[in-house]
Image (cartoon, rainbow, N blue to C red; front, side, top):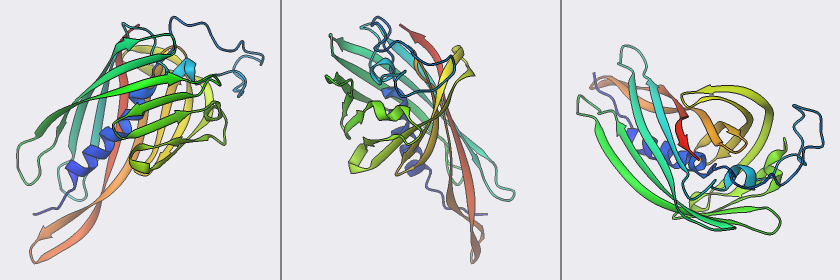
Amino acid sequence: MTRSMTWPTAGGSLLMGAALVLAGCPMDGHPPSHTPTTAPGDVSATEYQPRDYFYPASATQRNVLLLTSTVDLPGTMTDEVATASLTSEVTAYGANTAEVRSTNSFTLPGTGGSSPVASSSVSTASFRVEADGTVLVTMDEGIERYPRGVFTSAGAIIGGQGGGVIRMSLEGGPEAVQVPAGPFSALRFTIRTIDGDYRSWYARQVGSVRTDSTGTFSVVVGTPPATSSAVATVSTRVELVSRTP
């Protein structure tokens, strides 16, 4: 049985999407920008500020997340799992600016009986808070803007990597979320990118604690010349494993 998979490409897209997770850093050490004026549990655009969720907490912040992708292959093909460890650490810190260095170490499953492929990368993002509270995240791939509009059901356009468009919108919450780092009360967002949709949970003064996504790609099954195309499904979850404020 033969198959044609695009795992390296798929894996790269998943790790690119994880940059959104790593950008979700909190505001420990800063007072809340707004005092809630609504009833408990009422998600209101006036209750939240991007700087409370997307700006690094302190000069000692360190977040560790685990990315796990499970591939459901068609027929009798063996399902596969890819993992990545995502670590972000603040390397510079100021009143309205910060620099975060992210290290991604991931293992992709082999294809056609080959060994798994291990790789790693290091990237740096700089954060700046503008006067209106908008958070600018500058990375190698471009600049992302997080305006207050992300805290509405309509959402807001965020400048994406490589010229792509990302829309982030609030679905609901706060709601209870359990991850390896512990239980959190978090807001649930939908993030739409050129690579697909993500669902992400952000906790106040913690950042992103979980992100889920599901996608598909084509595989070739059968023995030449009797081959055909089939669809495989990949489910990905990124969870906060530990954090140091």
